[in-house]
Image: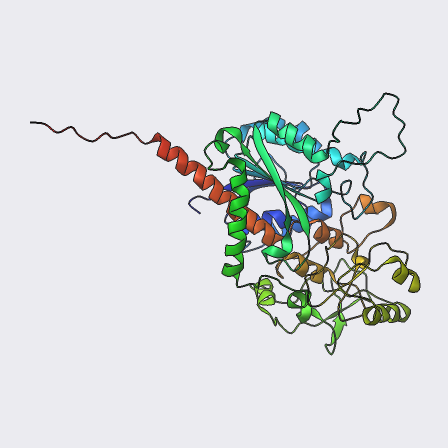
Length: 441
């Protein structure tokens, strides 16, 4: 990359997207995240950690704390405008719960409308490029249930998704936008995680691209291939490739000394990586591993999980009949397959069963499946429940909501190459035309 491009991150969560952009050589300006636990994790790894992968040139007017985006716009709208011309890439992943097919799709979920605040920040900063990651459901129009229309509905009218509304808003703000579904497992992430990646480029810059906005996705595909080769990863990284070194069998169990965990939890000692992916994730880490706490399953639960691993098909969600056989009320339970990428990691720790041991996964195993390096430490509670589930972002939720850093790394490299191409085309167009000298005499 010819230039250190600068990014800002909205709805940053614990920092998966920022980490990936930093691994691609970009430098951070600021990040906005409203949840205190998630921002604590972000700050510990990307602002405060010695030798961090990125360094943020944080604005003096912006306090390093958890911010709500509405609060940011109200208190620092003018400060954002003054940053125009300094932000190359504005990243953001507005909360996806209202769009996700894994939960209850709710058209009126207020989190669905946070993309409008994202657009307001785009209008203030006028970045050169933007990138948004969200669940595929963002591109699907919500079905109208239990609604009586008082006015006749045009049967030929097209249903409009939140993605359509986003594209329309960003077009009005001066950006060409397109999107594609991307499976993280194709980028070295050991997880079948399909996400909608929307990329926008300012219209005055997009005109300099050969192929327009679609050039971004061609570059992303090229970076995908180059990333696997550069990192020495196989085309498919399986669950066992990712977490076999974290299995507990025949390893001593010790007390979990995490100050944010209640007592009487245990964790397994660590003996070192076994596969290329594990070596990549463990690189640069020293000392005890963070977030290795094991769940305290009862003997009855462990027995039930053991039977599921022996008798049920692995790598697919348990069907209704199987769940009834084992007395399980949860709708989404996946016994993992060791020889395939893991199913999509969610915010609920009991959605996935370990492929070889009768237990759920640890936060660190979740992080491995998301491609977070082992040095990345998580802060806050491990889990939450009840009414707090929509208001708090404990460790499992932080990991489940994150953009996989290896996917974000490829996106960062693709955007850097795209901006390089724009600069090169503008420079070539500005060169004076030199005519050959006329022969004399």
